[in-house]
Length: 130
Image 1: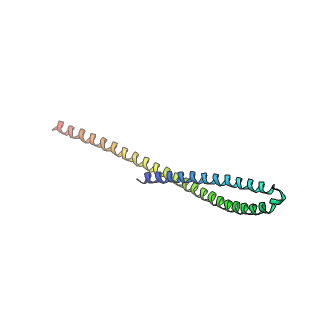
Image 2: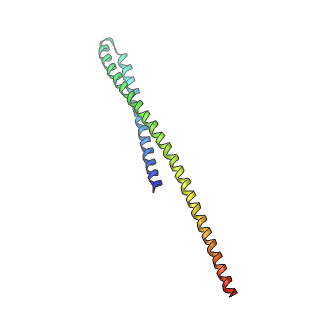
Image 3: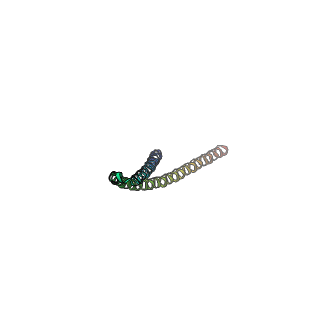
């Protein structure tokens, strides 16, 4: 049951990780577009210089905000990757525990079968001697 919960959580974290990676890629694309807009504005004519400057400032402020958001997303991504790694280790330990428990149960069942066979033989030997 705990294994299934861990598997579910691992799946959810992996999905979240993929989603965050996609968000980071989209933010990078937006940043490139904004920088292109700034460059086009800067190449504009003298009459458009003030407008280009205003748009450049807006774009730079947006880019700064996006860079901050990108940095936060990257940090969150690293945290999620770390969580996933921890969960993978935990799942590995659970698998080892499960395998060990199954091995013990199989050995116990085998020993019980062996003991029953010995008791039957002893019982048959006593009947044969009587």
